[in-house]
Image (cartoon, rainbow, N blue to C red; front, side):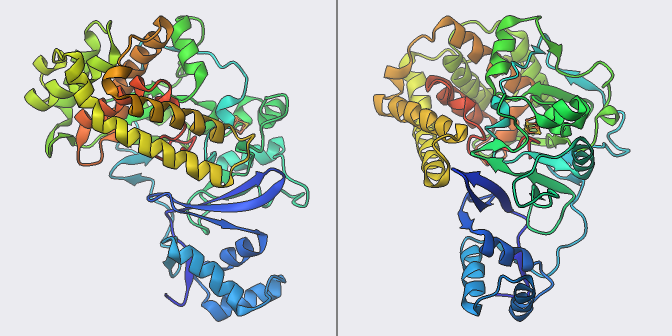
Length: 454
Ligand code: SF4
């Protein structure tokens, strides 16, 4: 190991209160590996900031009153290194505002004038129940969000009266351009017992983090336009879709181009070449045209069969207007398409449940949801896909159709298809999730959900 360790950028350090006990959880953003730290171990990990060797960490720990023996420091660093959570040396510069797969707002000169296009016909009404404030592994804030929250009065925990520990780095242990909120039994610390947001109550909606204010909007840059769709992880979204016109626009009317978006949002960048399936890629413009053609078609019928039929047509013909008509599949053929995705979904949700069971409180909504979703996915997988292909109840069928429309419009399935098997595989995964009701509402399914969408 290098002589100057620090938490790697892919280490997601989060401060949790679980059943009244303070603990620090470090997740690997890629593998999901997890290391739990108590307060002493956390203090040691924070002193490992890439500027100190182990002797320097021991000296700093001694000065901070958390040093007892060298083996304790070694044990903390070894546990983190064993989960691949350690990098070496000082962190390079500020976090990039633009990468191959996303850019952060405020938009730069290249994207400022790009128009925003919201999901047609969708209006959103929040029920105020606070469920979306208790189902994300990360509540992300920018430094501006932090400043506004502190002006409004950031709620803190006993022993941290100046709220110095409420926000930790979103990535790694050093950079503080983006921060993550303390969670209490899985819920945002700012969520009040009466279910409201303490920041909103004290300072109005503008006091909330930007990602919270614009929730549930998602953003995808398609080149000439930024599509604004909705996250599919909150009951209010589906209830709003079912209600129709009764709600607020997804975007305030004053937000017309990317340059109007407040800072702190992640806009996914759809690549020039989109993986389709079986190693094939297609030009982004062709995929967008295909998506529009799919969205223009009537969407009645079984969404599971439609998603699988679209996957088959897409693989056979590429993203052409002809492929926008789903292949007609028998029940047995749909079941065959779903066999592998269902097994994968069952495995994924089981591991997510086990991870939550290992340390989350019984009161934690994420744990409860993961259990419910894992049980549903396991039951579906055990029954077999064909036995699970029963017609959905009308309300559920309507929600599923809306989910496919929102996912296609917002290019969510392209986001999921960054892996090699592509958009067709994402469509099958979508079908598998719908055949196992509510699986697609599992928070952060397969990822560590972040309210900022990163
Ligand atoms: S800060 Fe955001 S996540 Fe936290 S309670 Fe307020 S609205 Fe909810």
